[in-house]
Amino acid sequence: MKNHISVSELSEKLGYPSSEAIQGLRLFKAFVRLSPRQRSEVVDMVEQFATDPAPGGGGRNRRFETR
Image 1 (cartoon, rainbow, N blue to C red):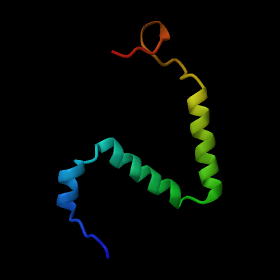
Image 2: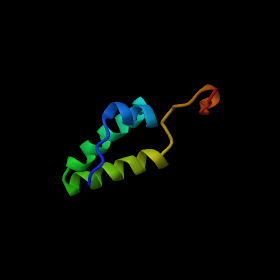
Image 3: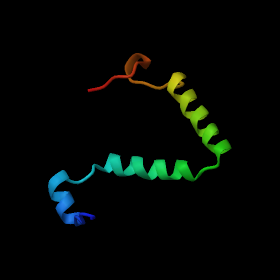
């Protein structure tokens, strides 16, 4: 037997997702729709961005600063 819970009841119990979570789900859905070759290209590009320093980026003295 299935237990049907309305969206409003679920939202009351769990709260609402953040905009970052919603954007992440949208990106994931778009990624899943890509062909395997395109997914591989996206993964390679993201890995490159993650490992390569930003050219000329950063704050004072070309260092990234968080405040």
